[in-house]
Length: 111
Length: 111
Image 1 (cartoon, each protein chain N blue to C red):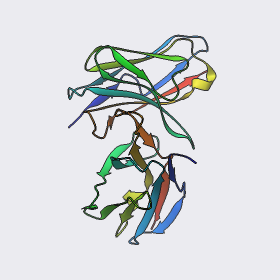
Image 2: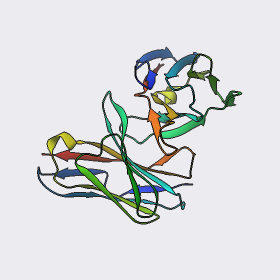
Image 3: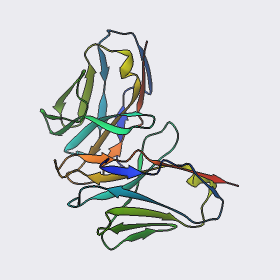
């Protein structure tokens, strides 16, 4: 079974803090993704990566950055957390042109 | 027009009934289609890929109608455990790596 593991299920951070969300997959997948999900809006792509050290902006990259130093790990960084970044964050991985598998999600609250 | 549209529901259906919902997509060149299931406060999980010829997995049947640009999901003999939100996903022709997600259709199976 594919396993995608996110470092935290729940996180509470203060406005202005730098926040790191970590994601690790164990299936040697080339593609990794970070999404956020808000009620009524569906999943929105923040960033994706198709190889080590490669990254592409998704639909809503503002306020975020990513890092992929190793194939199995894809990190999402909120440079200066704001209340409008309160959301469910979902990491996913997939082989090329295949359906992604998701981690359990991180529910981030910025206060 | 949104690229992928779903009726948000909720669909309230008695246990044992058959229920179907559709998902329309705007790009006629799209090639990959998937249905995911998402339980409340959990991550999306792949339910089925959708093939041109249609495909069936137990009580679930997925169909693709290219002429009218929609995919459908049919659930027969519905169970209480089928209660979830069903997400439709279509690949983006702007990028080989990106998928376009519908906002989901909520299904509630009542005893």
